[in-house]
Amino acid sequence: YNTYHDLENKAVLTKEGNKLGLLEDVYFSEKLGTIEAYELTDGFFADIAEGKKVVKASGEPFSISKDAIVIDLM
Image 1 (cartoon, one colour):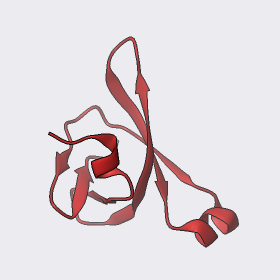
Image 2 (spheres, rainbow, N blue to C red):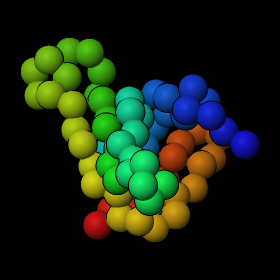
Image 3 (tube, rainbow, N blue to C red):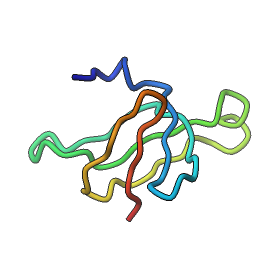
Image 4 (cartoon, helix red, strand yellow):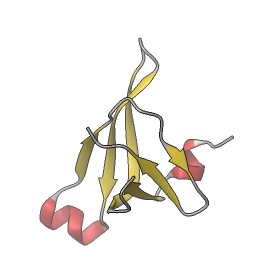
């Protein structure tokens, strides 16, 4: 069982192993109870220079390992 605080700032990878960034926030549909998107950061200075990334959730289940969250991109 994981809470948001357990997952915050954990690396987010694609199923292919590409690092997308660190989990900063999650957007979800309260009505459907599903994750809609993930907000990712590459760190403070990258966020200032490039902005934070928002990755749309595919609707597929994600997996959580000790070191990372693995998601499927749309």
